[in-house]
Image 1: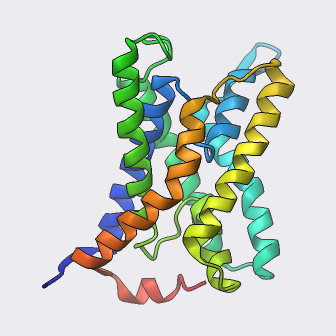
Image 2: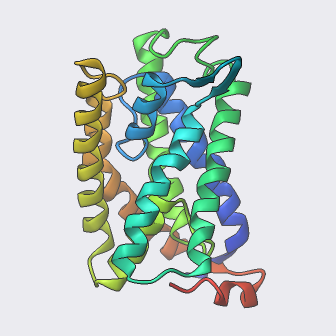
Length: 239
């Protein structure tokens, strides 16, 4: 079977747009967000702004996303036992991701908390929104794994550490997701004394995400070959 050629740089753009859309969808469904974004989402629910006298600095979901992933980036560099300039591009991806996520949530009324409070839609609509977001999340992460441009830190963490220590990527992704889920559960109980942002949907994503990413990765490998538009730049992003 002849494979179709897709370009790595365009895959990167598509991955950011689709992944942020998926996160906005699951947050709006209010059945539990992905364990990957749960810590940032819980922090956003708890701390919506910093007040410095008359100055108010909003702390959005997107802002907390790249702050949390900044901490993961530090752990990543420790495990890799080195720091490269190209690694910092993964954090830049997180910043771009954060702004695009906030844009989705501001522009689309369905995702805007002030217009459509999370969980206010009919249950059937929430389930469809969640299911679509879950599948789209896994597909987007699989896309990120196909581009040489570093993905957001958590995906770069999985890709880099699994390669360095010869760990099966799908299994390592599942383990990483489980650790993030436990962390998020501890945070929501500490902040609210109950589960907020964490729900049955979070558990479903935790159980299915690694498997779905593996499935989409195999399908992409079967039907597409990825080529860089700028191969000289690609060579500078090796782990």
